[in-house]
Amino acid sequence: MYRTKLQSFILNAFIITLSTLGLRSLDTVFGVWISNRLGAQGIGLYQLVTSVYGFAITFSISGLSFAVTRVVSESAAKGERPFRTVAVCLLLSLVYSITASSILFCGSDFIAANWLGDKRASLSLKVFSFALPFLAAGSCLRGYFIASKMALRTVIGDILEQFTRISAISLALTFLMPPDIEYACCAVVLGSLISELLSFFYYLFSYLMTSRRCSLTLSPAFQGMLKRILRISLPVAFGAYLRSALVTAENLLIPRGLISFGFSSATALSQYGLIKGMVLPVLTFPSAIISSFALLLVPEVAETNILGDHIRITTMTQKSLKVTFLYAMLSMGIFLCFGQRIGSLLYPDTEAGKYIFILAPIIPLLYIDFVVDNLLKALDQQVTSLKFNTIDALFRTLLVLFLLPLTGTLGYLMILFVGSALNAVLSIRKLLQISGVRLSLSNWIIKPLLCSAAASAFSSLLLRLLPSTFLSLLLSILFSIILYIPLLIITNSIKPQDFSLHRLKHSKTTSRRPTHS
Image (cartoon, rainbow, N blue to C red; front, side, top):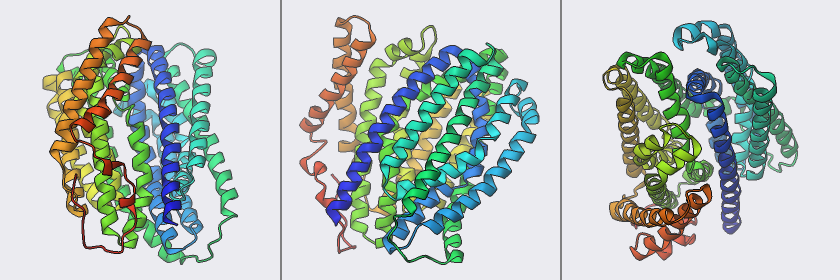
């Protein structure tokens, strides 16, 4: 039985990782096309619109997607049917999302004029509001499929959503909308609305089909189920509300801070769009693999936590952190050595390459924070995660408010580094305490960093001997990856037992903890 569960986890991880990487690649290429079509100023306006929309999404979901994954996973460990959980979460999501949709639609003119400082955003906000109920309900159903380890269902849903979005946006930008920033942003929003609509109906149809084949008969009481869902979702929701509100305030304050520093309104919006809408998506592109892995860890760790298998939790946490650090160091080395070339190829005639190089050291902080945050929530530490995320968001907002008008773009870069470091350090420290894992600075950080620097530097020398083309850049990056692995083995950063899966088996003992490697 264990072998079957392990094989299922590996298969689901492979399917989701491969699909996410492919879709992220497609999304990045399409994002480059949109960025070059809209320009830095248009992307800046779109980023402001999505900041407000992001808060509306947070309120619409209110932690319910994560609650579905957690409760369904725990129900599976207890032999309970999951459908009452899904029904309750869907009902709550509709209440939340319809409320948010109404507020966003009615207040779009006020928000655009007074919060965003640009009336051209009003139309996009109105269109966005119609997508909220479908997005919220679809996210709950997606959480059910993740908890039920039906990776193929989520992959198909992601593919459907992505291709629908790309097709709709391309058609709208090319044939329907006038060449104006206001309508160009609205075209992108319209494509998102259509994709969310089709994605929801796909998940609903799949859910109705799979629910008929469930063999479990035990159903928990409605009152108890509602209590379990609220106990998990409300701390996540309130934390997400506060963090999202602070992040939204931060994003809205950034262009104003740059204007106070001395930039014109158009230049400030362009600088914001360049870093937020162009550079950061490139830096986070490799995280597609890590994010898929972290997403699948939630039901596995939650189920193990319910069973009280502390040894397996420690082992899973240790392996997860080590893999994330090794991967993040490789990604950072590649962007340090090839960031300038990547930026000039993707966004010609911009400073994207310079900012990719400058922000490359932030990669380990971003990647590890995402994995640690998911592990903490899976271990019933959502209140702690809420506290850390709130501290981080409040600290960054204060820095934007007081530091940015004095330092300009340089201050914005400093804020990204300081805020990411604060959140990562707090989260890692808490996870190490509750899991019993000991952080190995030598094998997880120092040696991999040196190996990554050596592999990427050697590959960059080879790149200078080749013609400056996209193919030569891709070959150099692939060579860096291939060279990185044997260097890790030579330096003893990875060991044969790291590739062994037998230590992940459930243990009958809960008092011992394995040592770190």
